[in-house]
Length: 385
Ligand SMILES: [Zn+2]
Image 1 (cartoon, rainbow, N blue to C red):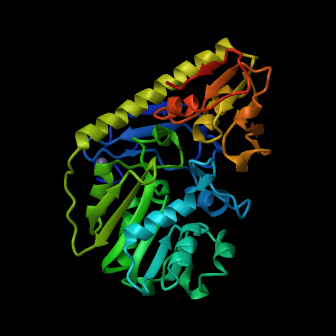
Image 2 (image 1 turned 135 degrees about the vertical axis):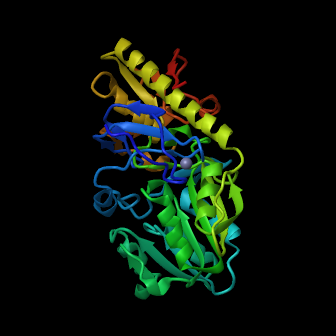
């Protein structure tokens, strides 16, 4: 494999990969991709990145259909105190409303909108604002028709007549996918009025280390690397919020004249943390494949049908008999994931003693401490760390 030349944020030459694993890789929509997983960490700005995917345009135009299957499909964000599920777009809309500080009648663009559920919910709270949407696919047009005027919709490219037009742009969980994040932010800057507000959300790999090996997340931003990218494209950073949406950054910035990119504080610490996460995955892979080979042919379940659980299932495939995923999300029950049924934890199969824990390792022990299984048998819990 040809080594990747340059950091996508600061342009520095990159050295050897910090992590490398053989195909298949796992995508953010939990499908397998016949590609190695490779992570580079930049020493100068602390950005971590995966190589470009083959045929990236086709992947987003026709393959990447997140949340398209069912109208009410939404990712579980958390469980409320009363056990009621909270869904992610509601939460994104609430944070966006607060951080954008929209003036009355604001023209707002959802950039990389997909179905744009977040903006739709935002408009429900603020009927005065004028919604616009842009995406690199036409798959989502049907979801916009009822509430975004046709002339306020853009697909594939943005017409120059939109330059300097918007009071606000928001972009949720899009920049991690793009091969040219600087060009992406520069395009957003171009459509904003001077003084216009940007809100961008993206994964925080330090809070959710699984993000490092999501193969279609070409970018794994750190606090210093997102600051660097925003300053380089004509923004002043107002707030980097890591508290309101666990596992993600919500960043607000203001469009201004000129660029001021330079070294940010905290690069050395963020770089070290990226390298530590890469070491974690190396160890996790070695330990999981060892356990798998020792227990070959046995029955097991996997706790968690999200990214971590799917990654485990991918490694166990063909060697162990995975009878079910266990997951708290009621919307996943009675469905199959990767050809495996998904059940509530209370429905743990009586014949299974081994549970692989497919959860964020930073939270896994706390979560599992609150789960009760319908048995007093000794269970063999296998952790990623
Ligand atoms: Zn860099």
